Amino acid sequence: MTILQSIDERLRSIVGVAQIRAADDGADNLGCTVEVSPGNEREVAGVLAYANEVGLAVIPCGGRTKLEWGNPPKRADILLSMKRLDRIIEHAWADLTVAVEAGCTMQELQAALAKQGQRLALDCLWPGRATVGGVLSTNDSGVLRLRYGAVRDLVIGVTIALADGTLASSGGKVVKNVAGYDLPKLVTGALGTLGVITRAIFRTHPVGRESVSLSFGASDAEAMQTKIMAIENSQLAHTALQIRSSHDGQVEADVLFEGRAAGLLAQERHLQTVLGTAHVVRSDAGNQRAAEQLWNTADQDCVLAKLIVLPTMLAATLRNLEQAGKASGLAWKSVLQATGIGWIRLDGAVHALQAGVAALRAYAEANGGSFSVLRRPASLAGLDCWGTAGDSILLMRALKQQFDPRGTINRGRFVGGI
Image 1 (cartoon, rainbow, N blue to C red):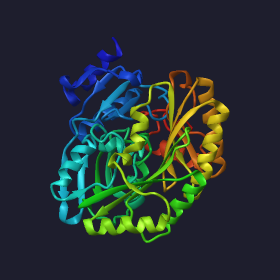
Image 2: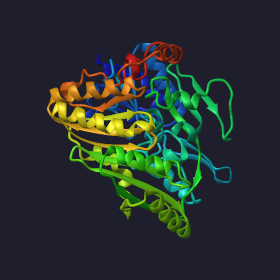
Image 3: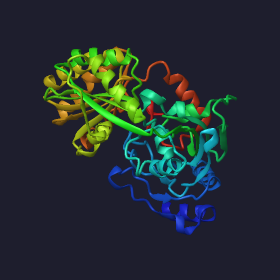
Image 4: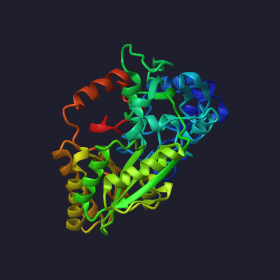
């Protein structure tokens, strides 16, 4: 009897015949045999309990926008699709909170919140396809992080299905809620290795009435760092601030303001005062999604990575990137936020990509940061995505042992092969 046949027999009573099919990994090529689509939390828990009992490995997915992130799984049997869990459970608009199932796309969630003049102040990659569970699991945030905080600052409650079939909840529908494990923060960015997120509760914010995106350039990285720090140390109430740069010498920054028309005009004038002689122009609001363009225009032979450094090291980081590119013969582009978090795209021959990643990772780690590879060519599949784990790996392994001792969920994809 094949694995597909045996799985079909055991899971039929949990999710129904129509929700079990041969897996189609697409370009991600994870190697799963079967795809299962549960319709509620109990069914998710049942699938996990079965897989845990018989020793099968489960890969959770939603919109499949980030299945390639992390190391290749050590084993993959069941592709667990969360797309049917797509309800917005409750929007308590007066309390500025929303409860939503993990399979709901970010675009659908934002559209529902907008009806009450609110939003989840989170700009993830590919919101039309990316789901709530995937965004939480990958800790995916964009330029709004500067003003509203990271995903961990916006999520106030979660329910997850553990590998043994237990449904665990933490947090609630109030902004301040602390009891036991801070489960929402624990599972955010854990790449689904601790459990499968089934629902989440977020704090919401009012939608900005109007917005304006402004851009300016600088002669080099050091001059841009000076301008960025001047903006950060000013009284400007900017929502987002990022630097776009590339191997061809481009160094430009984008500032986003939100509010009423009169206030936006005052902010624009004050920005010009802060920057002095720099030429400030109104720009396309699409610049705020420049990081997404690095992915959308990239083929499979490039490397895309997430970089984290201190905000005061933006200029030094760009210089190091320029040097690594020249030394390895790589073309590169980067989008760095004022928070010190950014995306880097490298294009070149395989050996050059490998050398460039090694140099950039060594620089980041030597300065207290990190360099995580999230897309790489098939020829570099053996390249570790995460880099040096550090002292925290002992605690991370202990948590994995506590939540998923048999390695049922996303086995091997996270830091240190967890």
